[in-house]
Image (cartoon, rainbow, N blue to C red; front, side, top):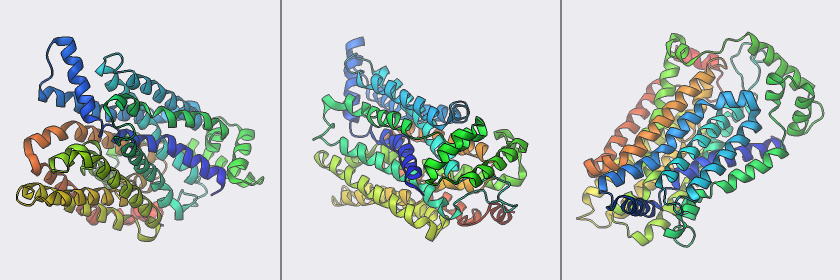
Length: 480
C-alpha cells in the first residue's frame, strides 16, 4: 500500500467512520443537560414541564433518530457515487454535517429542541451515506478486481490476504470516534451544561477538514474509467495512488472489468431474496448484521451514564470510567484488526458474541446483588468493558466484511442494502426502546441481549464457514 493510497483510506475513514462513532456516543454524557433543556423549553411554551414518560420519549427520539437518517442515507449511496463519484459524494455529505452542526449548535440560543432532533437526523443521513460508502464503495476500490481477471476462481479481490485487515480499518475509526466523544464529554472539557450545544456540533471540524483535503486527492480511478470513460484522468490517478508510472496493466484490467460489468446483470434486492442458490448466504448476512446491533452494544454506547448510575457508580466518577472503557475499546479494535488474518473470521466473531453474552448476564446478576454486595458495582464496570472488548474484537466489523466475502459482484450491492438496512433499523430499535425496556424489566433487560448474542454465536458456529483466504466458489461450495 503506497502512501497516497493509505492517506486517502485514512481520510475517508476519518470523515466517515470516525464521525459515525462520535455521533453514537456524543449524546451519552450531556443527557441530563439535554433533558433539562427540553423540560425548560416545554415549560416556557406551555406553562408546565414534561412528565418523566414524555421526557424519556423525546430524549429516546433524539438518540434514535440518528439511525433513521442513517437508513435513508445508506439507500442513497449508490445513486450519489454513480452521479458524483467518491470525492463528490463525500464532499456533499460533508456539507450536510455543516448544516447539522448549525442546527444543533444554535438550538439552545433559539430555544428549539426540534433543531437538536433535526440536526441528529441529518448527522445520521451523513453517516449512512459515508459509512456504507466507505465500506461498499471505497473498499472495492482498494480490493476489487475484474471478474475476467479472476479466471473462474470466483476471487475478485486484489489483496485477498489483506481483506480482513482492510475490512476492519473502518471499525477502528468508529472506536476512535466513540473514544473522542467520551474524552470531550469530560467536565473539564465540554461536559458542562453551557457547552453541550458546542459538544454536539464539534462534528463540523472533521467534516470541514475532509472537505478541504479531499481536493488534494484524485477521484477514484475505477469511477473515472468505468463511469466517465476518462482514460487520461484514470492514468494520472493511478500513478499518484500506486506510486509508479507504469499503470497500463492496471488500466487494461479495469477495462476488462468494464466489459464484464456491461454484460453482467446486477441483482436487485427482491431477486436476491428469491435466489435459492444464495439463500443461506442472505440469511447469514441478515443474522450477523441484525445480531450486531441487537447485541446491546448500542445501549452501552447511547446510555453508558444511565447504566453506571443504576449500578451505583458515583456520578463524579462516571465520565472517567466511561473514558476508560473507550480506551479499551480502541485497543481491542486494533487487536482484532491485526489478528483477523491469523485467527480467521469465525473464532473472532464467535468469541466476541459469546463474551458479550456472558458479560450481559453478569450485569444482570451484579445489579440484583448490588444491594447486598456494594462491590458488585465494579463487576458491572468490568462486564461493560467485557461487552465492549468482545464487540470490538469481532462483531464490530466482521459482518460488513462477510457481506463482501459471501457474494459475487453481481449480488454484492443488494446484499449490502439488506445488511445495511437491517443494521440501521436495529440500531434505531435499540436506541428508542432501551430506556423503556430498562424501566419495565429492570436488571433483567440485559438477559434479552444475552440471549440474542448466544443465539447468533450458535448460528455462526453451525452455519457460516471460515472465509479467510477462500474464494467465492469455495465458500459457495461449503454452503451447498
